[in-house]
Length: 295
Image 1 (spheres, rainbow, N blue to C red):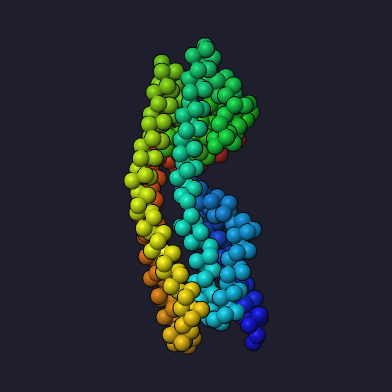
Image 2 (cartoon, helix red, strand yellow):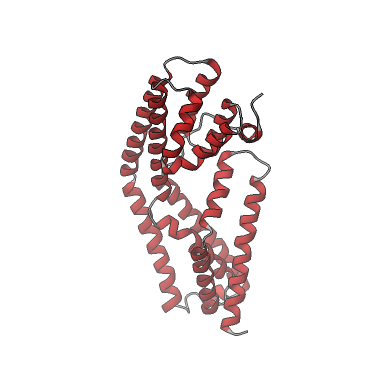
């Protein structure tokens, strides 16, 4: 078997593994209504871009052509898929901050509109065209449900389920209280929630700054390990010769799993976790908000 044929077969095998993992994740997330699983599935679909898939396949083809190791080809594909996100900037944290700021701005819009003697539904419809970009899609869907005649509490619960953000849960809880219990001083409450959201964003920025050293150390450890592996493949093939046997391939998978677990733990301790949500298990409410009509 030529090196080119081995590279192509290894790349196709790795691509099949990626497709199987993605399919299993989507199948597992379908019968459940957990916003976390739905968010994870959406992130996997969003990250499966053509450049990322191409880089992964090219990396697997090169490793397969150079080493002709099935285990090494699979490990190289996994490294090419996950390591850029681990070694790169924390984009998830940046998106979370943008979302919190957007929710605070949207809350202030509702407060100002309600203060002008407008109803809650009218305030949401008025804020739709100028909603901040990170939450505009969800606000547009919320306004569309209201226009279709959905009951306001159901539309708000669907909005919370789609946004899947703890700060949005606080705002939706206040709006639900106003919609169902006729709460007083809603404008003042919304103003307090907006201030709290901005303070929460500042706190997350301070915590992220404190974890910058840990994240930098994790990047250095992972990068040095990968450089060492590449150096061994390039200049010390005799040292890695025992991995060319079937038993060596099995051991290579074990070693790769150990390093992958260590890298995952380093990544976990260097990033900020998600805050607990207040409104959960809203899948049924989201469907009701989409299809429900005002009696």
